[in-house]
Image 1 (cartoon, helix red, strand yellow):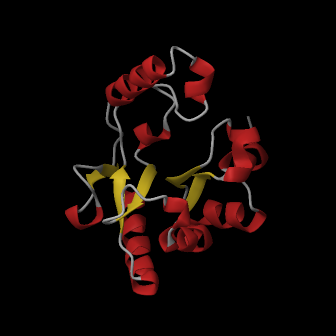
Image 2 (cartoon, rainbow, N blue to C red):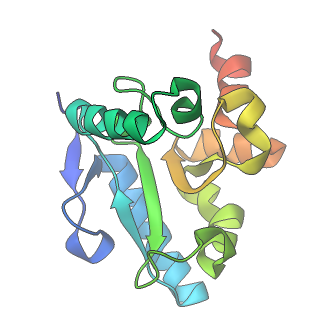
Amino acid sequence: YIPEGMVEVDAAYRYGVNMLNGDADAAFRQMADALKAEVTNEILVNFGYRSYSAIEIDYSEALVDAENDEAAVDSFMFRPGADEHQTGLAVDIVDKGRESADFRKSRSYSWLKENSYLYGFIQRFPDRGKTLTGMEENPNWFRYVGTGAAQVIHSYNWVLEEYYYLFIGI
């Protein structure tokens, strides 16, 4: 299954072959260009859309590494069928040429924390959100939610779950 409206991310903005939702792709390119103009770093999509089967393989491998401790694996990885990368709206971002560096210490990350909402993106798993999200901090994982939702989430320093609970409901 591949969601409708997916596009291949332009080679200048990605590693390998990556796809995103068309709106998320356009917003990512605008955001990457603005970041490059202000910070002079280049960011790339390391992971965009991921299939159920790809996530299933990664989850199974993580379980083996964690000696079948599902709770441990669930704290940093979604199970197949629940991973937002399957929507084409989630993106793992890295600095070009600094893929193995700690992204949270980069100028790109600082810029994204302050500006990504202007392009409709939020940091999906910030350090303050584990109680609500159930996930450990992930400085590379951003989610396209559109500019309206992103502005509200940024203004109130929320995670997506808080926005969802208050505006969409359970």
